[in-house]
Length: 554
Figure 1 (tube, rainbow, N blue to C red):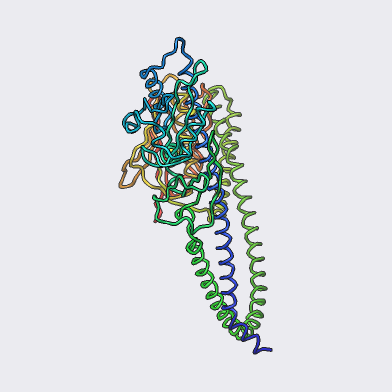
Figure 2: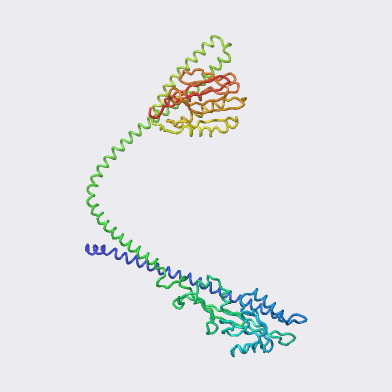
């Protein structure tokens, strides 16, 4: 049993090739049948188009001859002059292409007038009988005897090429005044009817009875008999019944032997590739089974070691998760408490300063003593907050610091403050040589927001040309960043405390400005990043805030 299975595996690629190749041949045959059906539908459509065009053209030409005959005899008094005939003939010949000639034959059968004269001059003043065979002569005589339209069988025309004549008696007052003779060359009629793409794509044959009267086979060296795909149609118009036969040319429908050979070759090639890949896959599978049997023992041993390692990893992950949770809890608690206490303490200091400024001369000594007590208490609270902030920094040592261009950050802040800037009509200038800074991007954004908001807030309502400038300058060999405005100016108090608080002039308080908490945050963030902040200001002449930031390598 093992031997038979082994032999089957060796022959499996060949079997697969035969299966895939058979599928490719079936697909090729289906594609050929599909294309044959499409070509057949196209041929049928073009055959119907040819029939409709030929019938339409000939019916229109027969109708035009009938109109000419009616107009020839309807005039009172009658005018059967040559001039009048040539005018009619020229008009119809020009506007109804397809005629080879329009002639007038007298009652005795002599061709008197022709149009156009260039191709019909040889028949002028000749008896129509002399140029026609017996069947042709019978048709002419029957037309006169029965006084009705008649068409001759197709024959060689004096003008050249196969064609036919039509005769229509011109009867006036019960007498035959002559015959209206229409001459049609088959080739000219077909060239007038058919589009160039039809002549390019198809062979066309037209038969009258058993006689072939038209074909375009001279345009191709191929033989239409080699293909069995063809369509038959019947063309009918007054006096004629033709058989139309249409064959697709080789360019449109090549012989079956060479049809879609690329598809067949591609299918066989893909079948061979797939069979080869299956052979390689079978070989690889054998090698894999050998390697698998060899590795099973090692896998079983490694599995035991991995299980032990997973147990240790789970214990370590649990311990790390516990430490991370405690660290996050401590960090969140310390940071939240320190920041929650910071704002009310700074606000109390601001209120105390405002009381001393507004009511300094009216406060009794006892109240002053209690105010001092409150001030001492707030200072101690500030020291406590400082310790909490240091602890919170320790908890936030994992915060990611990056290096980024200060100019882009300032532009982002200016965009956020644009509504306030436009409301006050402030012109903001940012120097082009601002450095790259290193730190927590969110905190540096907070610094610039507070400094620019402070400058916008205290720019002054009566300032005729409010301006704010952001730039950098060299001081003692280091780069110092500044934010300068031409506002109302401020004066410094409590600058040496842990939180830097600024008190505005009385003129600023009248316009309901803040307590300096935002500037205290500025000082804390800059110091956290290893920098310093200071200011230069003069009441009524604006304020300039200077600050430095520690470099990445320091």
